Length: 170
Ligand SMILES: CC(C)(COP(=O)(O)OP(=O)(O)OC[C@H]1O[C@@H](n2cnc3c(N)ncnc32)[C@H](O)[C@@H]1OP(=O)(O)O)[C@@H](O)C(=O)NCCC(=O)NCCS
Image (cartoon, rainbow, N blue to C red; front, side, top):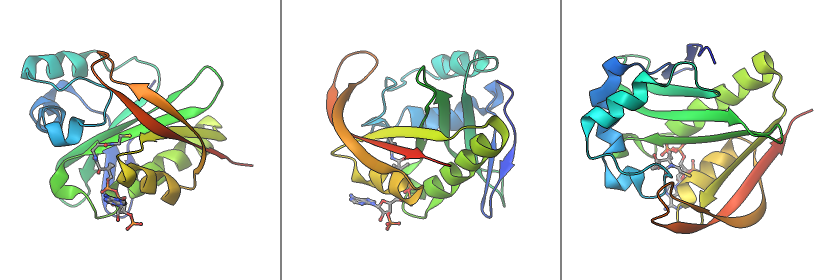
């Protein structure tokens, strides 16, 4: 999918390229960030470079979250259309930037884009019960808890009890 550049008051959301490898590695290799993410903890900078190289042309949107003022990349997010039509999203930021409303600001803008430009009306996400900050982001984006479940890391190393959220827009 061709990825747009989206702006908010404090942020710029933009496509990631292989030139961003060092910045992306800084959060992908951080165990504190990775704790509840499904992707494996990256230990190899080259693996991040390979991931960034094959991003263009993948379904869904993956975007870097940068500070508008300086252009500094502080995290990333993604949103993909599921088979049932719901747009499912996730996000992660460097810990130094947690607690300032950035994830909420970014995801509200992405939801607005998917709604206005791609016709999305059904949004979904989940978070680990043990990761309530992520749940707050979802609530502040307008999603509501609809059930519970579990999810596992892609390598199967860990499974987390989770809370499922949805939002249906008119
Ligand atoms: C989850 C994450 C993206 C949140 O980013 P953020 O920019 O700090 O989010 P925001 O500032 O927009 O909102 C965070 C909210 O969580 C709240 N919060 C933070 N820690 C919390 C905790 N331990 N318990 C409950 N609420 C918590 C904050 O107070 C804030 O809510 P408020 O605005 O009502 O006060 C960030 O913590 C992160 O990158 N974590 C690692 C990756 C991750 O777990 N991603 C989600 C995977 S499902």
